[in-house]
Length: 288
Picture: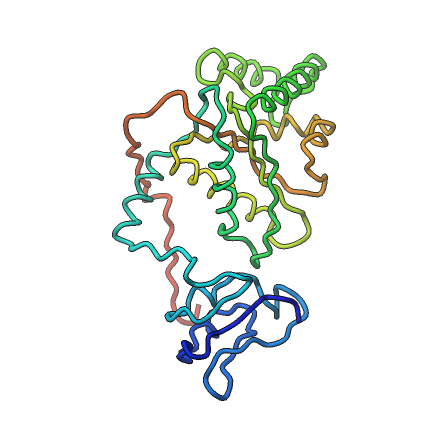
C-alpha cells in the first residue's frame, strides 16, 4: 500500500459514511463497528487514492486526517451570501492588462498564489501541470529582448508568427504606439506559463483551468494580468528559446500569462451582459 498517512479518530467518527460516498477511488468503507477504514491499493489514481483530500474535507466532526493534514488547518467554507458578490465583482472587474508598473511583485505574494493552484480542478486530480515562472523584472526584460530580436530577425526573412502575415503584423506593430507598447508580452514584468505533458490526463483543460484560476488570484490581489496566445505563434518559430524556458517539447502550452502591478487603475467594472442567443437549451422527449 502506498503511503497516505490516513487516520480516523475512532472516538470522533460517527459512522455517517459521507467520506465513503465522496471517495472517488472507492477505497474507504465502514468496518464492523461503523468506523471508517481505508483499503490497500497499489497506485494513486484510478482504484486507488486520488490524493484529493475529500475525506478530510467532508467529515462533519473532523475525524479524518490524511497526508499529514489535519482538519483544524483547513479553510472553512465561505457562506454563499458573502462569496457570491465578491466573486461577481472580481469577474466584472478583471480585464486584460497591457500596461504595467516597472516593479516586481513581492516573492511571497507570487509564492502564495502559486501554492493555491494546487486546488485548481484537474483531470483525475493527477496534478500534472507545471509552471514556467519569470518572477524578476530584469530577467523578464532580458527574455523579452531575446524573443523580440529573434522575431524581428525572422520577419526580415518574411517568416511571421503563426496566423500572421505581413499586413497583420504591420497592424500589430502600429498598436505599439497606442494600446500595446510591447506586442509580444504587453510589457508585463512577470510571466507564467502553465504546461503539462501530452498523452496522459487532461493536459489541455488542466493548463487552461490553471491559467484561469491564476488570473482570478491576480485580480483578487490588485494585480493586473493578461492571457496571451500571440506569443505562442511567435515562439513556435523559436525552438531554441523554448529550450531556454525549460519547457519539454512534449508538453502542451495553452497560454502565456503576463502579470504585475497595473499602470492604469480602472474606476469600475464593466456591464457586459450575456446575449440569450448564445444559450442553447435542448429539449428531450421519451422515445427519441
